[in-house]
Length: 112
Image 1 (cartoon, rainbow, N blue to C red):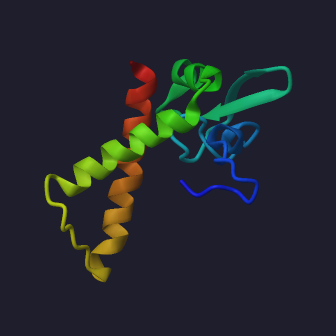
Image 2 (cartoon, rainbow, N blue to C red):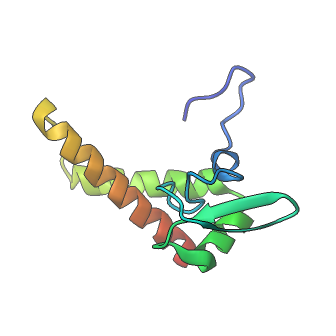
Image 3 (cartoon, rainbow, N blue to C red):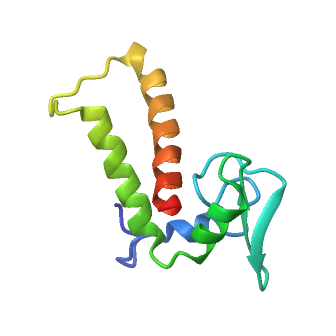
């Protein structure tokens, strides 16, 4: 993960807190509802719902959760082939596949 100029990893959770555009769980488009307290809110999409949103809102190590989800998607994409090649014409579909699988992996992390 790229570090900021001060040498620290970015805090993924902070990008989703108080952001009505992004689901706190899966980072997809949020709906009209949020969980939270003390002026801090985590909006959620209709697929993730409030239960997973509360778990994500309360997560201490969101960066670690997101990294595990990213690794799971990478493993699915490689499917045992370390020499994966994606042609330019296939890239939009591949990125769409990655986004959907990432959202699924994040939901799975918080469902367990």
